[in-house]
Length: 211
Length: 80
Image (cartoon, rainbow over all chains, first blue to last red; front, side):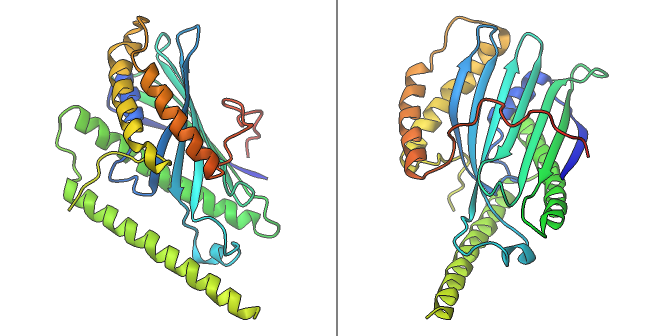
């Protein structure tokens, strides 16, 4: 069973600007959960399309009820791959993003098409689809619901992140200041540290049980 | 307070190479590629150095990137 989700979004910037922003979108005030970013493959096809593969590591935060079912040693970081094709002749960009870790627990796949907004050619339209599935016996429906809810939140963050980066590129003062960004980052770092500590404490507790 | 405005690489030693490459790429992408100027990629050497470093880090950390074809997972998908 797979949960399917689709939505259309708009950015009030040209397709060119959005594509440039796509490569410069991290970090932004809404992406503090994204820890590392790497291009691990890139090429230009004979048809002059840019194909790229980007590897991201993100913090892996699950709700309390899900954490109970995660093995203690489960990695606190999730790995995500994003493949993309930029076609400058047709002015389209297609992206496919999916997690390569924790996939049995929950698999989220997102496909986006970026194109010139047909109603306003100085804007960009993003058609987004997602497929969310889980293979954990007895929990898959709950996990999928959680996954879908989190995905919708992340779409909002993604769009806000884009708007922030585009505003910066165009020389506007972004609505979120650097100070807020720094404060959010500090909060995020504290959260990661807290989770690490929790993980270690839980490990120690588990060890005790089997002594 | 230090405000980090650039991303790190998954390979701690690769971050400088990554940032150098990204800077070169971003300029080429905006000024040449999007204008369909095919006059050649000035970033290939930087990319090679960066890739050598990051692919090594990926292996060391056992990150499971192998075996997935480009745009691979998006086969026939059911609508719910």
